[in-house]
Amino acid sequence: MKTIAVMTDFSDRANNAAKYALGLAQHLHANVLLYNSFVVPSSEPLGLQVAWSLESFNELQADSEKELHLLADHLREDLSLLPEGSFKPVIYCKCDNGTLSANLNALLSDKEILMLVIGSHRKRASGFMLSNHMKEMIDGVPLPILIIPEQQQFHKIGKIAFATDLQGTDLNVLSSLSGFARPSYAQIMLTHICTGNVPAHISEQKINNFLQEVGNKINYPNIFFRKVTEEHLKDGFKWLMENVASDILVMVHRNKNFWDQLLNQSNTQKMAERINLPLLVYPCPADSLPVF
Image (tube, rainbow, N blue to C red; front, side):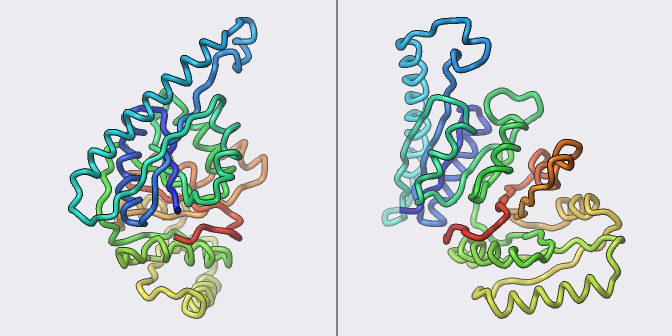
């Protein structure tokens, strides 16, 4: 059955993200997988100087499993309060030894997983919710990643803002997103940021062509369009965050070349660090996306 995988390090932010994921799983009629990567110290470079016993490994694994089951029990308590006849997701637990990045490929071999959910991080925070781990996930995961801000609670999804640059692959994203929105018949607001370096007539033609393709190929009627005009792209994103009321912001992460990544963060990664509403990041290329 369709499954939402929650990456947890058992921090308050991660636990809150798991609660949000539970509400989302009810919305999508999906199950929930709680997942933790624990690292045996001897797998770290300095740890090679120390002999770690099998008992130490077993103890770390047992601790991870215990925390996962405690979290699952808390979530099941929330499910017990639902009215009779409500859909109640099945909650699974899984842990692996090693870094999250090393274990992602094996985890994502489960074709039932629709998306990953993680809690947003703070700078200098502990656990795997650090900037480099979030960057690795955004750069390398071929599934949508939902990033949940601290203390964000799930409620019925009424409006989704999709920041699009009008590329053809965004139609695939929009097709997947329409399935995500359909259970609550949420509005999908296509938002395009027009900057000063693009001539107005070219921008308008590109918008018209894209919207025509949307009308021809996307079978979801509750879609509308809004143009945001700013001199710089970052100003457009800032305006979007501060002025457009929505329940979820959607972006497509397009990998830059090596030097761009070295010298500058992508817009998606910058947004992920300062979001105040859930951010759903779709991968690019978007050739094979989940059907919600």
